[in-house]
Image (cartoon, rainbow, N blue to C red):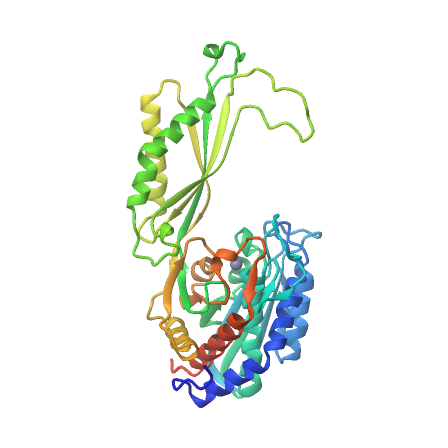
Length: 435
Ligand SMILES: [Zn+2]
């Protein structure tokens, strides 16, 4: 596509520069995958931050290594390290920031490649985190390095961050950095998060999250005379029956104008995350029988994903009303409802500068119409938006979203090269923008 008529001379030069760095891009991705930054518990954060610091320091960036002390999970054994690299340009202008999380989820079973081997095969790099999101991080680094090598006299500033704990909420990463002022309109103007949303798609934001715990209560008795007790699990069964009868159909009717993908998530959804009732599960290896008891408590955790058209208060009210309906119909029914966690939906405007710049860049690199999407699950945009008050933020990066967290996760090398071009073009566009 280098000879695409839509490309300017600057873009053609950037494109050639990135293609020339293809092997470096692959090796960088391999190196990042080989640092097994599993979260939980949050392993090797310091190692990967030092690796990135060395690399970007060599490319002329000022480096800050920052530990999010006291955030969830932070300890001397598992410190929450983050790295921010900044390079000032030759004159005043906006700051373009690329933010990637450095953590990966557990490997699980079913792998045919070494999850931390960074194997190259079939034009792909394999490993845990290849697409989510070390491939995106590597593409943004190569985009930035190619850009500063060609246009060292750029205006404004460029930042790259590698941040902790996205997979567990981002509290020791972007949330903490935003609280410290590292993501703020005074310091940063445009943010691209290279999560794996496919190279031709612009992700405007994500749905909201509302987690809660429902407890039902009963009375313990001998299992041979259940009528002398009150079974908390049967009460929970009544809650589930009511969910099936009224809640799930109601959620399916709540469609959203957000362009959420896949289509099944273009509505309100709820997952029953877990149910526990009665006696605790026996320890592994215990070969005895349970005792005969009527369960006196049951607990359900629900994971409700909500839309930009909904308010968290309405989501709460809907569950409360359901529990009250069960209570009215069922003698002896009592419950507790506790909200565990809540994240607001986030959606950047289609006319926002970063969206327009990436749209033009996708057209120039791939000669295709970009698709606009919203993620079914959240990512660090919530903290950039809510705590950092930065509205000009999207996710854009190489890799196929469906492969995230799966065995034999991979990122396509050609996709990384193309995404790096798009990022470099978008950076060029945004830095030269008249504000
Ligand atoms: Zn991710």
